[in-house]
Image 1: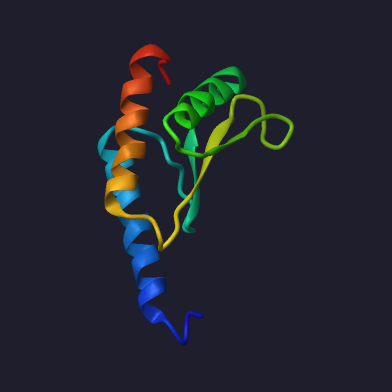
Image 2: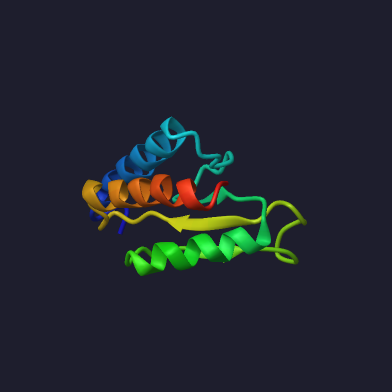
Length: 106
């Protein structure tokens, strides 16, 4: 697919880079992953699931990754960015996280 439809690969990376930039601008810790699947660090097992639930209420799906899959105090939300995502959808995630952070500090 990368060879036959390079525009899809290019759009996915444009989306990944855009979301990383926006999350970083908002002060969110996204680790140093270099793939289209990356963490938003929460470092609290309970908060990961609370925040994931709040995002799901807004029709945004992320997976919570907690101990024992990661070390204690390294819990994170797993974000998967696709070429099919639109910038408006990525902004919805950023906006939702900023709003949620007001009631569930992370």
